Amino acid sequence: MSAKIKLEKKVLSRNDILAAELRTHFADENVAVINMVSSPGSGKTSLLEKTLSSLSEKLSIGVIEGDIQTDNDAVRIAKTGVPVHQIQTGGACHLEAEMIRKALIHFSLKDLDLLIIENVGNLVCPSAFDLGEALRIAIISTTEGDDKPLKYPAMFRSADVMVINKVDLIPYTDFDVEKVIHSAMSLNPAIEILKTSCRTGEGLDNWSDFVKNFANEHRE
Amino acid sequence: MSAKIKLEKKVLSRNDILAAELRTHFADENVAVINMVSSPGSGKTSLLEKTLSSLSEKLSIGVIEGDIQTDNDAVRIAKTGVPVHQIQTGGACHLEAEMIRKALIHFSLKDLDLLIIENVGNLVCPSAFDLGEALRIAIISTTEGDDKPLKYPAMFRSADVMVINKVDLIPYTDFDVEKVIHSAMSLNPAIEILKTSCRTGEGLDNWSDFVKNFANEHRE
Image (cartoon, chains in turn yellow, green):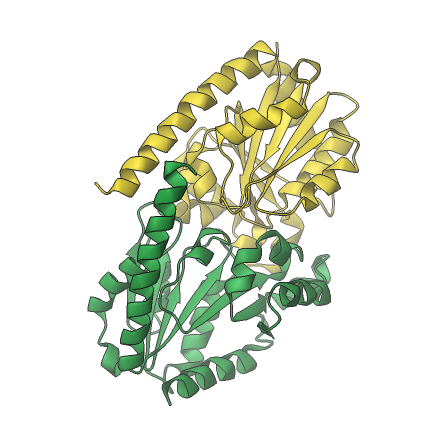
């Protein structure tokens, strides 16, 4: 075993310990936490904007944005009026629990019902880093191709929910919805599946209800 | 500086040394090498299939496929009749020069004009790993959003060419071609830009000519 692999194991294990501590902390503060993961450009930020417009009067929500360098996404989210903090990873390809721990100073957790973390756009590395979330949501857009769950299995195995986004573009692609659902469920039989389009609004009511119910049930 | 960062620097540096050796080796064998990088689902494999149908009778081409676990892409490429070897990274989020060195045993380099490496779908990590290629091509699809160069600057800074793929879907998205070109050129003024659609065939002749000319000029 190379020094690099050994060290990565050690780092992962430290991340897991800190993530477990965060999970306890979030439970103590009665805040439901979601970690949104996907490829770049699957529509995480657009879906988040729609979610906030729909739910920000029903739930007290905070957002942590993860990006490599820019604060573009935090600027977009701030326009919704929801408190947001941008983590710039400075080149790192994923968020880690320690980054979330440090970001919490920017929120009053006891006043939040729901904290949504938008991870760096990357279908590989974020799968290995628990952030203490209660729910991990993997977004796949219909233009990425229906082979993605099988090609990036760690992500779809570790996710609680798969959102198939950009369903309005299905007529213009070869995307086979049944195939992608079958692939995801073959990796992870318990995965929940939702379909959305931020352009047409298809599925957004179901999605918002799902998020609202998760937040309320998690906090009961 | 943490032990992890120190070690990553050491690993990168070892990769750079090996990549430089590979570059010399490829030059000695008179083979032009391309490294294709992008997000998952931007259409790298489809573009590669089109390239091979167009060029495999004009050039002797080999392909190295990089994926985390499956050999789906190698199976697709093998159908074109071009020699292909699949690297399964076993969880690693990018190809490294050492993986390419080991894969070369599967090719007779002296008989090849062009070796095309399709990297793991990831817009972050592969940017930091030189594979000894002569040309790095970043593919961005129009459905990923026009903010991608600024959000993933290392990739577009390190690329020689940006291919804007899936231009047939522009009418159904908010993608602003001029904005993405402007962003990419602000990071990398020398970057060359091509536009393609594997569905309609738009731009594919230009693209194939570009690849053919690169291979021929590089080997002169």
